[in-house]
Length: 385
Image 1 (spheres, rainbow, N blue to C red):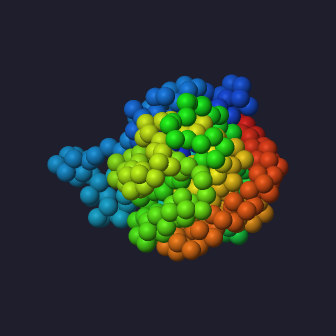
Image 2 (cartoon, rainbow, N blue to C red; image 1 turned 60 degrees about the horizontal axis):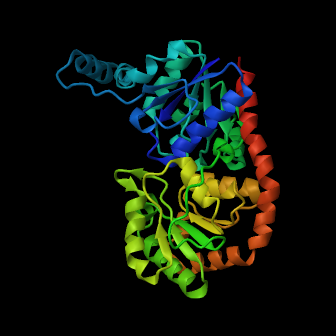
Image 3 (cartoon, rainbow, N blue to C red; image 1 turned 45 degrees about the vertical axis):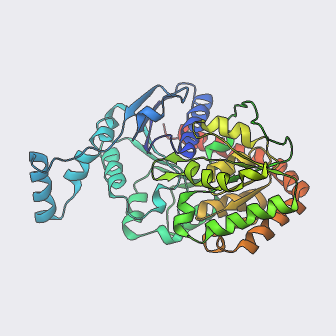
């Protein structure tokens, strides 16, 4: 079985890297004859991912304004309101690989949470037109993200694998019977432990991940996070490890966290992890923390999967759904509108500290079940053949 993952923007987002790494590993572990390929928007960032049988350039192509392609595209759009030709040329790098594959996995997790995706819709149509199997792999989608056009696209899939029950239930309510429940593959990802940095307190370090994306959506959140940092320093003896997880230009956690580090470094109780680690290396540090506070979903998954009590600075259905599946409730997940309230952040942190042992016990019971659900996705794939 030849499987190609697409809709991947590159591994400077370590969450995207985690999805590719873990998906490739579990597919090859459970489907012996599987050959797994990746079409990447930035293939140069994915070279460190093992087990892949090939990495292709899946970046978009530019249509020159003075080309024959632009003329035909304009004609089709203006006269027939048909953007298929233009989108086909733009996404040629992915579309040209379809015929060589048996199964196409649309990955990325929350790609469908950001408005209409006409490019992905066009690729999906081309996959089905060539008679190939089409799978939406480990997705999260909110009710607010749905539209008639998106629903029609989702009907094309042979299989939609929802990574948490909120998405699963919502898609079923919309009449989709091609949906199955699984869990994010990154729950199964391995870790690599590097030497601990100076200042790290073993068994008494709290990780903090804060992102430009959260700050953009709620500008007041930065002041509230600063208030939380001061609270941790004043009321505990813990070290804080600032932990980046996305290092893309314009969306770089490291830049945001470095500003906080510079502000508090004189305390001697903060460390800043570097911006050049892989997903498994970040997971190796997170696994040795006592607590974790995170805005990036896959940084929190790294914590959860190592039984680390975690406070989620959530901004979408995925954070709530994953917590609900772990704890039976949306435990210690703050919505984007709550992140401007320093008191709420401090109260949630204090709650996490008070309930530390109980949370660890809950995670110890839940994680093996969640990891089993991650592998369940591979069973569904194998049944497509």
